[in-house]
Image (cartoon, rainbow, N blue to C red; front, side, top):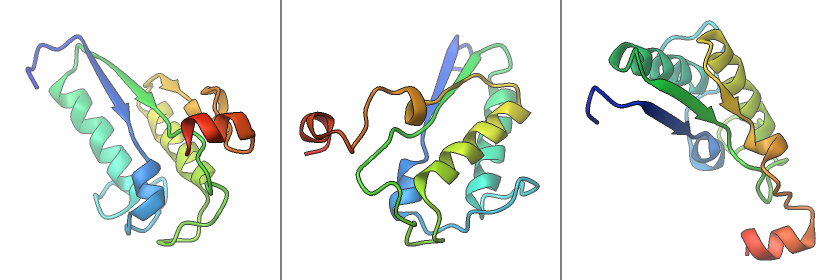
Length: 117
């Protein structure tokens, strides 16, 4: 990406939950070896590379099976959402919480049929 971008949007976490194999980690992690550490690394590097850009973080949406523990570490999707929000808050990055306010709920049959066939 060009260094003079106006905005950067980070939309992630669902693949980390669904089939990622990294340990979840702790808030103090600053390594790419854990999910939380990778969030810290990504956000801090984006700020360094694009200091004048508006960086916005979008959480994963709700998804079918999202309440089930992940295969990698036994955590539900909401844990990934909350960790992403906590790390983004540390860097003072705005967050669009699509999990809680995305307007899609897999427990609603109409949503499930339309968005999650």
